[in-house]
Image (cartoon, rainbow, N blue to C red; front, side):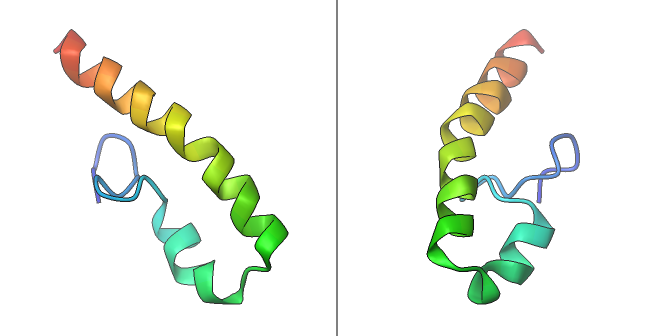
Length: 50
């Protein structure tokens, strides 16, 4: 887990999302999946600023 973002550097999910993943229905998983590209882009942009 990245301490700056709170997301896994591999899957871009939060620890809460990872823990709940097995209980989420497909619609809830799609909501998380929709956010992942933006999280990755934000994390990569933030790392280039440093």
